[in-house]
Amino acid sequence: MTDLQDLYQELILDHGRRPRNFGKLEDANKTAEGYNPLCGDKIRVYVKVGDGVVEDIKFEGAGCAISTASASIMTDALKGKTRAESEQLFKAFHDLVTGHQESQTQDLGKLAVFSGVSEFPTRVKCATLSWHTLRAALSGEGEVVSTE
Ligand code: ZN
Image (cartoon, rainbow, N blue to C red):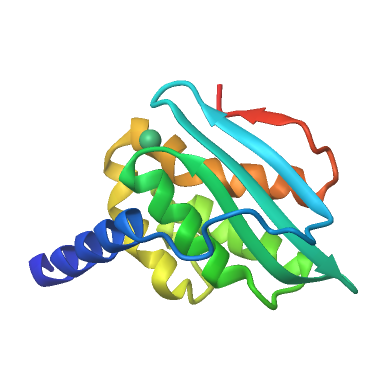
């Protein structure tokens, strides 16, 4: 278990330091902004949706290692997924970080590295900020989302 936790921590630190899909997506047709006042994390998610599929996704922002790593791994996980699949992943991820893993039916892949977050309630908002922001972008609300 310790080895697994070390591995998880390493992945989070790696994605926190060198986030994937970071930057502005010029041809995005959906975007939203998210803010977590508790920690100071800020994020903007850009999505290019075509035919109900997430064709491309990037993000910009500044935040703690958890929020940055979460956005980085999320964007990797969602490329090529349909909106319905994205929604399923959101639910599964939310269950994971809020400690409802028993309802887990989905293979979360790299997203599983955030399972330890459930032990730190204040960190749950850091981990879910990018997901809430993504949902706002997909639903076309396009406004600023706050975790508060
Ligand atoms: Zn944070």
